[in-house]
Image (cartoon, rainbow, N blue to C red; front, side, top):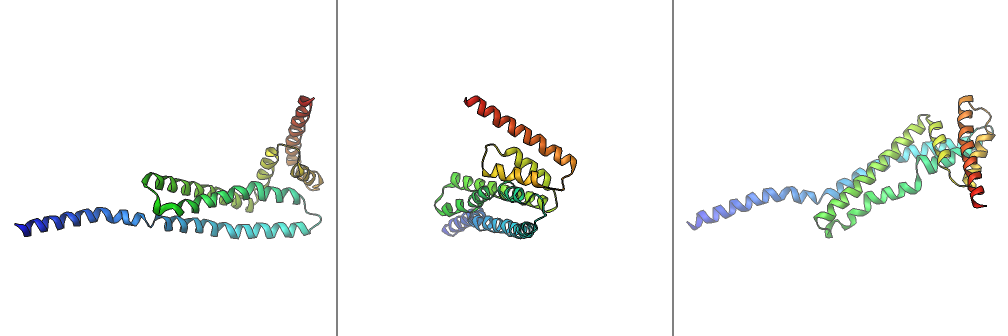
Length: 193
């Protein structure tokens, strides 16, 4: 009978071990997320190199239009450099605490990492669309988001009005955005007095 009890206990332990095996692999999750994060950044880096090489080539050409505006749009609106740093931190930093985290915190760490990955994917698609030539959508969107009178505001609009070869429809769109911005700034000044 003792042999039967030992066999039952052994079978029970084997059964429990089969349930625990996937949980052991759960500890490999940080490596999986690190690899995905690195893959996303590896995709993004050649795009960055291509766009910046194109920009610096364009910057050397004195007849090129929208040079200063494009630099601002690329850094602040396409790549969103400040946010991209936060997204990368969201992918990688949560797993630093993986070994000491309880299950609810591990779920939060996974959520943060996935959220960071989603935003990096969004940035990658924006960079891809910019590279394909969808630049005016981003230029218009960036100019609409410029809120206060700053060096970026002045440089962006100077770049627009210095451009020589603007399609009439795009010029109308630039003028509409500019008019709204100036009207808003005038109203702010009037409200202060």
